[in-house]
Image (cartoon, rainbow, N blue to C red; front, top):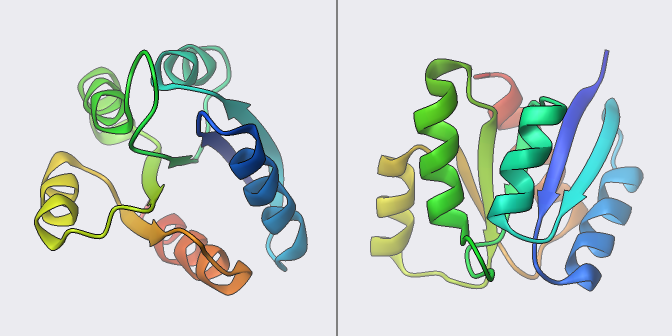
Length: 126
């Protein structure tokens, strides 16, 4: 059975690019869903659990950090893996995110290989 993935980004274009990227890599992905902000993502996860969340940091209503905090509080050790996909590259910010519970970080723009490698890395620890 393949990995269930949720893409969370306020940019429809970024969601489409990431979804297309997932279709190009040679991994078993059984389902890909989308949300445009952290609130939608939490509702989506409650209705249909996922294995992995690719999330932007800067979004309206609820940003990626707030969303990750809610996921960790609500699901604890059963939380889906959260990978941040963003243009932010501050080492301090990345360290803060890792302490908060994200499993990985991908800098935009990304390559299909980076996405594939990140999925392999985080799904082995899930």
